[in-house]
Image 1 (cartoon, rainbow, N blue to C red):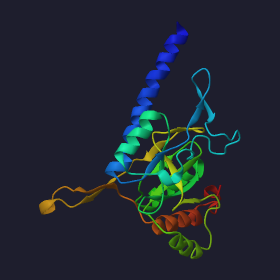
Image 2 (image 1 turned 120 degrees about the vertical axis):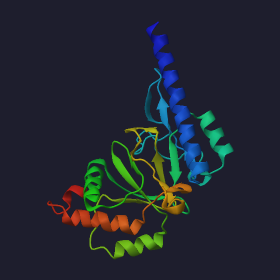
Image 3 (image 1 turned 90 degrees about the horizontal axis):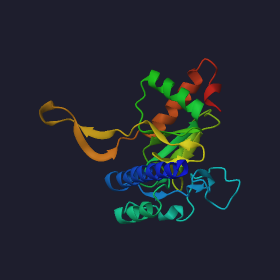
Image 4 (image 1 turned 45 degrees about the vertical axis):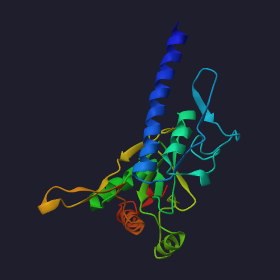
Length: 238
């Protein structure tokens, strides 16, 4: 009897999680025009628990959190394709294909990311959405080209050694996914773009997609936060 009840609870949880992921994928694809695709997800063991990556690599470094079938080039904003994917794979992670017209991101290890956000808040830096996993935090930024990123990095004397860049040809796992390291959540929820209301009234939505900061502003702020830290920035460098 307990086993039957346990299975029912897992089924109900799976349905809720699947619905939430489908809703999130549709919002990204149709409302925000962010191309998405399902991640490989986690392998389900005999007891119904999710364990390890569903890909063939037994030593996968990013379990559940990468494309497999379909590949990254299949990312789309087409609602019919998105519905088909998550109807057939309701617990698949939601992956954003970064770059092009889609957001890019800068990410840091979770502890360094939390400290960086606290320092950027202290500096008064306006941030966009921030995705948090148990191991890394990712700051979403406006799209940039590899050429522009190269110029920005060349202009810096030093950047945190663990800073990663998710640009064109990359991907990022989005909430409310579940991956090998744990749940994916919004540390900072997406903020809608707004414009002043008529006659100086309250701001109203200008476009549907969330506001994103420029990559140069975020990179400069991260470097400044590192350089101004009492420990010389070492707490942001791992």
